[in-house]
Length: 154
Image (tube, helix red, strand yellow):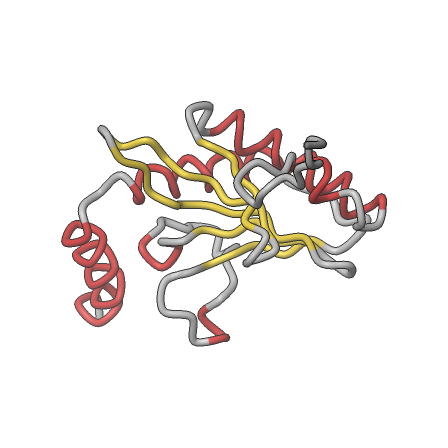
């Protein structure tokens, strides 16, 4: 019986193969963002999530992992996103997603040719990892505290 050629599954598909169909500018931005995530959270586990058409990052927490960040390329731009972004500190107001009424996720969008502020992105990825490591209740408390803080100051 002849051996059958195996097609990589979503979990084993190399990121470079996943990114290959995208324009050079998007692939270059993706490589920069991958480097940012590795610099910010070296223990993060990178995995192609073909169903979502993105590179997903899991944070090891004890014996489990928690999905916390993603790089989502599109033909016209690329996103660096955060699963628990709504609970993250974002003092410079860079994160998008509230305007789309997203409950938890927040993200940055980069167009081809946009400079990627690597240090600011590293800070946000670290913050995303910190927030992801919290319990659900702690994340909820952070979110509620931020939502109510302006009302308390008034």
